[in-house]
Image (cartoon, rainbow, N blue to C red; front, side, top):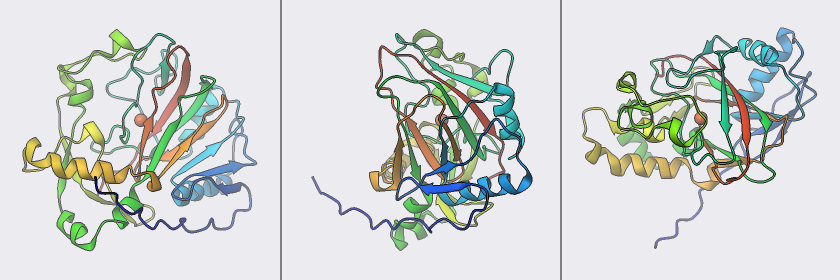
Length: 296
Ligand SMILES: [Fe+2]
């Protein structure tokens, strides 16, 4: 086995100035903890602008010890854009814009248990999601994120040149289509294999972030089965390499949840992975997802 040298990852630019919130770097590759913010409150525009800046600089931001009602969770998310209803997973009865990510003690399958970006198969995939931990296991159930800018920047110039201009096919079919496993059989998520999941969208493999202007890799695990104008078999070696590269440890951070934690990630330049290592315990999270733009 060839052991690769770790990429030289520099900590991202140090946080700029903040007047209203505390921003402490969490991981060298990405992540920051935000202090001095009670998400149940209504914020003026300056505070929201600083939270947005912290998100753009750190890619995923964490808030600890929060107590929010579903209405407050929704109200906070709406400050960043319109809300997205998942096309394949039913939202909460009373709050259709909130997905309850629930895993019961005897569920086998967890939601988000592989590296991916959320619903990247939409024409306009989400800006980001805000995940609120309601009930967590005593250990396990961590979530990992990876920095897709760094992964892009750490490719060789020859590889970046080769990938330039390539398009990737995104689809929910493998996870939610008729041939996929039925979520209702081994999980508490409200989703069933169905025909409506058999559509495809194409997005650039190298995406330019609409707010930072930085380029990043844009591949999304099982949602991206092939490159445009290529077969799955032909695409597999390249896509497998890119997913392995995107999720190399130096590009990642890992969050150990406590009830009351909130994570807000930029879905345009990160991937994430929810570990399924807490069999015998319940884990309940509320997710609200904010709409984004068509990738270019
Ligand atoms: Fe996810």
